[in-house]
Length: 162
Length: 154
Image (cartoon, rainbow over all chains, first blue to last red; front, side, top):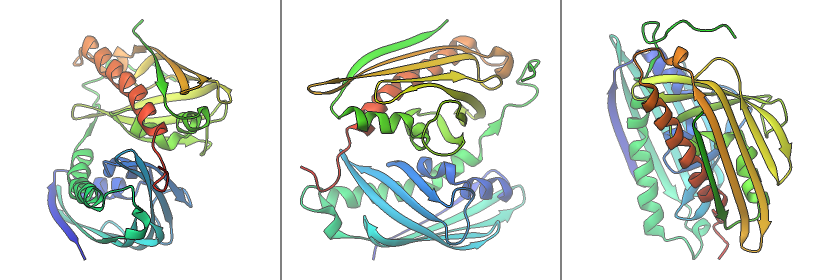
């Protein structure tokens, strides 16, 4: 079973990284070829919450069905696949370790594609490559987003009330 | 006032284009620099729906606030800006026309970036360019997403 592991130091506190990790409105930006996601129930990540992701492979739409199976606040979130869709099996575990003002984030993806789902049109090699690229870039995107800074007071002029 | 306008053919039925246009889930994929979107009430667009988005400009986060102003199913979709956030004023008008080859889409964006929001450290010309680039990409991405096929289809 293919496995992709990456560890990355993020120049942001664990609280900030955790907030992004568990804010489901960011999911589709973390995966480059994700197109949309439906979250049930809506809201921040919680055990039992289901994700219905739509991704693209070339000019085709693919479905990915996932469920949050474990959460240790500010430390660990685990997502596994549900039957159906692109994966025969899928598990993502992301753990955070505070390091002073920074955070070490480790993500492990274990997955297997459902060959029957791909049919005759989608190339297995193409899809394997796309999945690998998407999963490999996940941690870099998490780092990039976590390190963004809000506009500071010194950036801004006088704000009008609204 | 800066304006971005384009008319283009989407090789998909108006229903497919409409579903991408009106589903807030797609917003972060339509605008390259938008990171997330939260709609209130949640779900597909309805007149009056508020959308609050966070975006990035270099290493900075900004907020972008809009409201659905008009919906004529499969034909016309109008978004306006809300006060606060990156734009002093914002208006997006998308019109769809069913044609033999699919859907002809006309898109118009008119906006004024809020210099008050960004402050003097940001150059207004660069802010306008960044906004225009995102709006041009919005239309290209709308076409790409609406033209996606199901895996089993030829």
